[in-house]
Image (cartoon, rainbow over all chains, first blue to last red; front, side):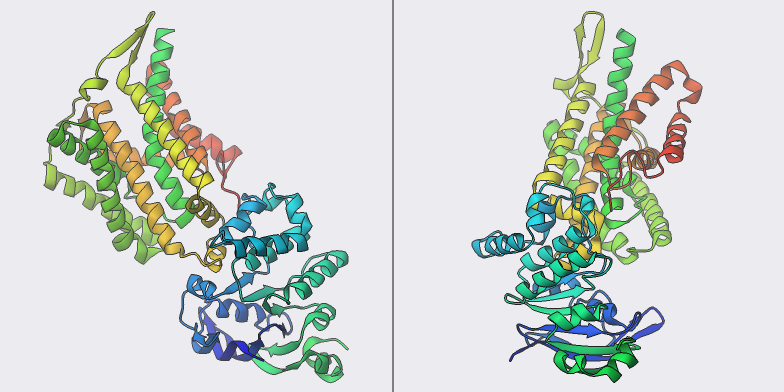
Length: 235
Length: 286
């Protein structure tokens, strides 16, 4: 099992605030690693720090054995990391097609094949191909955000709360899609919905007050009522 | 009828000149969130350099190309030295670009002299057409055609090319564009240079239209550029065209029919638009 991403003792300051105070975890190739924790624990900041949007002030982040800690965001993305933000980041007045096109660095056979695959996974996007991204429903925007990150030749996808604000039936669709995408890419997922997280996650990392509390196999956490109650308020 | 046609053509020509100035401003503000008060200086430098190139080559085409070259060089220098250190800070942007505007204006006096310079219309664009009772001045029609042509070219680039797509996406969400592997700082630089070149083209066309150029012209016209950007909607290219034509036409009619209001009318239009559509006539949707 290859370690694709390694986050090692990362601290992040935003203005005068010390948000991340020691985050460490690894993402294994071909797996879904889930970051769990209460609201405000530092999960989203962890993803943003990996991408250089809120740069690390201490610690080391390596991706495919390359140190990306100090790289600019576009440079990190170009190493093969795709990002699906919490608010989806859809370009509202660009069509679905244009949203996808911005992310496609090349239009070669391999990229077009990836696009076909993802459009088969999310057929709604094909239906609304010429429609403005801003006019899509919440679920369709989520699908577009995931599809867009996927076609950018990403070896690793960072997905932030894909179930947020979606109807249960749409969450089911998104979950199935993530499980399918897992065959082609590695995923680091931030998710509050533990049912979803436990169904698609292979490993987990618990974050509390900006620190990694513990990591392990998702199957172990599912049966650890004490930890779930203490850190996630469930069980 | 003759009067109305002439006022309309005059207004359209003025509108196109303002559009060339505002188009760069709106792109720079929309994408880079930069308030560039030095933009008028680039307009003035475009005018002076075109006159200099025209005197040197006797070719108006080369004069315009020379103005574009000036715009590219000054745009590059301005972005790298003046704008880059103050990204994200509007107060600093206003102060430093206003200061640079003064430097650009004074530099014109140092290089070309402090006096006004009379400018002649290029020979093949001198004169007018007579259609019935209506006399149409050739150079004004030329400005209108060039204005629409520049609009068409930039619309094509923005709508049909990958770089245009990236610029439009960048106007909507800069952070997201970076996470897609695009170096937004390079895009900023290209857009700034394109905006500076548009201002320089505007200056080059303005010189024969006005018949005289002076160092402070940039400051004077930049205000109109900002008004047009606000009316059209910050970040909207078609909005700037529409607003510039509106300002040009209303200015032309008012100067004839109600001269006392001709200066105030632009402010009145801007106030009305801000009351009913604070986002401007068009707005790049986020």
